[in-house]
Length: 261
Ligand SMILES: NC(=O)c1ccc[n+]([C@@H]2O[C@H](COP(=O)([O-])OP(=O)(O)OC[C@H]3O[C@@H](n4cnc5c(N)ncnc54)[C@H](O)[C@@H]3O)[C@@H](O)[C@H]2O)c1
Image (cartoon, rainbow, N blue to C red):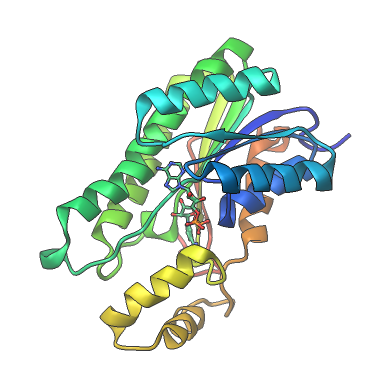
């Protein structure tokens, strides 16, 4: 028996990057998967690959996590296609970086809109279905930036600190319904598409080439490597499984020792 046998999981922002890796891993552990993303074509490709590689059901669902009607409809569609909903991995996220005095409000609204308001909406509408089923697990992908501020990072850090508060409250709201909620705080996953873009943004603030930026961030990690998507997927599986049945409201670091609180 696999650890997530026949669970029904929605993973947001799963058309690429960390979300795609988590979705594939949950399917390998026996879950049926809804790949929810703004980019339907990429979500369909990811779902089709997961279904082929794992033999589990994997469907693509289009949604914009900042739009409540879209999220509500997508969670209904996922639950209907999968035959219920037990697991949510709230992963969709974006990052814009600027010195505070130059930070465009539109970038603040974009980052907090996807990362924090989007998480609120996805948790709200996934929880409806989990309450109906009488059980569930929610995992939110936060960040090391949800534990420690960083240069030029006000919007992203505020959104990632914010999801920890959101999850602590949701854990309390949903505990009587048998639903747990936790946050994973990954370190810098230096090989992801998000980091390729980030290295270019950070090259301005650090006056380095993008390749030097990557080396600089790797050198800061006590275990001397970037976070691998597998490191995050390992913890997502554990927190989603019954092995974590006594854990709720937690925000757990996967940072190679970079963050210790
Ligand atoms: N890459 C890292 O180093 C790193 C480190 C710590 C935490 N994280 C967090 O992990 C998560 C995933 O990061 P990633 O590196 O895989 O990012 P990514 O940019 O590779 O993928 C993000 C996905 O989210 C989707 N998305 C964006 N806006 C959306 C919206 N409004 N509605 C629906 N889908 C939307 C995108 O289409 C994309 O498929 C994010 O929450 C990020 O903050 C990433």
